[in-house]
Length: 196
Length: 196
DNA sequence: CAACCCATGTAATGGGTTACATGATTAC
DNA sequence: GTAATCATGTAACCCATTACATGGGTTG
Image (cartoon, rainbow over all chains, first blue to last red; front, side, top):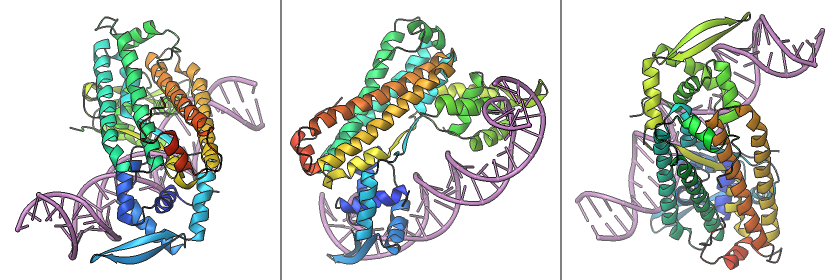
């Protein structure tokens, strides 16, 4: 029973964890959840409107220092929907989109040298991602769960860097102009050897 | 210079690595690249048409045992575009969408017990993913790069399981009805402790 | 006083999935 | 003969991003 859409649950969760205006949600989306669940303003504001109409949340116009904004809170219905989602054992959506892996997949005919160049590009990207997440850490404040998910991201990218390091070390032993596919087969004929 | 769209490069790469009919591409997309780059028939076939019209690929109608199909090959222009993409140091698209992490992020007010339930759900999901990738291994045949990206997926999910195992072990030491946020703070006040 | 942040939205566009539609061939 | 696989495509829909649009408040 998929009662609500994913963006709807995100909004409910945001309210429950103290992000009560659309703007606050927008910031948290950019600063804390973006690295595992991207969401844009074009989703947040319409979602607030429809959840309001359907009675999951309740918005109150507030004037804080001359500046107007709408502050939302969960209704009983909204609280129930959120709790159901948070405790549901349903299969959670999981998706990875990695253009670097896509290039690796098609690298069969490249040279070992070219493949290693691509691997270096990927390591750089993961290093940048770590830097970015480090920068976000202070913004998590005292939210333990925000630190936890940040931690997951940091560890995940560290894992990837490590994985590519090991692969690169093995490729470094091969002649630079060898066909990448042949080199990989020579390193691990069965494709069964873990790099973790 | 983003010469072509992502799906276009996928199609070019598919042809270069021997998947020369739309159907063959569709199969490879489902069996080998789906776990890091999803793509559907609704993208493949229109893409073949437009790449054909723009002169990147060349389609020839073939009748193999009475069954008709179109077999594509790369033109010089298509080969160049593919090589540029495969060797480009440009920032590659990287995106993770993990509903489980999203739930973790909003778990602040749950009990330790509920949080551990959610963690168990996530581990199950990663275990299922590994099973699925193991099943795909024989289909990779002698494509070294296919085995490599499969290996990455397997190691990645193994990393996640391990990460959640460690987190769960720490949570097992806390009272089951403690607030999840408080428990996490007690385990790691600075949110800086790696679980990798 | 300019730049930036707070705050809220809408519209155009693009990307992608699902379902639909068709029909031949092969394996059991 | 019937189920699965080969093979190709289209259309409707959903989702999401980007850019646009507006305006008040705060900081340097």
